Amino acid sequence: MIIFNKADLGMKFIAMAFLLQACQPTASTYFQEVDVVASRQATAQAAAATACKSASLQWMIGQPEGVIAGVDVGGPVRVIAYSQTVSMDMNPTRTNFYLDTASRITRVTCG
Image (cartoon, rainbow, N blue to C red; front, side, top):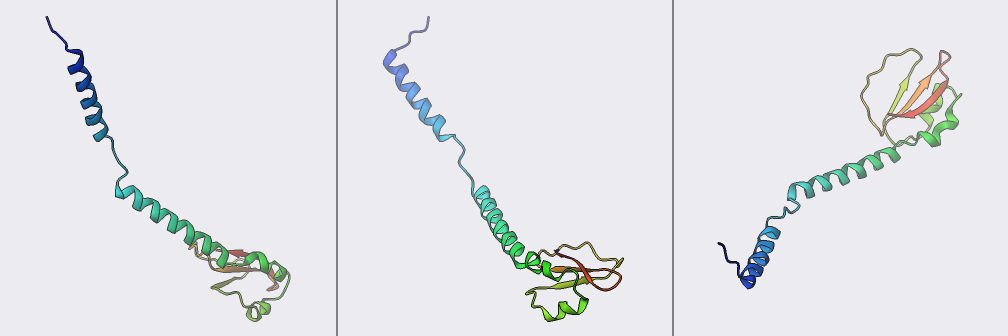
């Protein structure tokens, strides 16, 4: 027959609770670093998205190709002629000007 001492049993439960609390996992520095890197990437993407001002250049649609040279775009520019093959590389700061067969601007986009 096992005899339990109530006072002794209470102390064992308290000691067990402290031991289990010590075993709780804490956020490692790895996860904190991942959060920092993710927030830096989000900031960089937001800055890149505002670097290309294609929304403010929509007035150029219908204008001849020569107008592009007279406008300060503030970043890299790519002029894409009608049915021209272009690479699929993505540069969010680059402004793309699409031309039709008459060399008039049909679209202004970022990328």
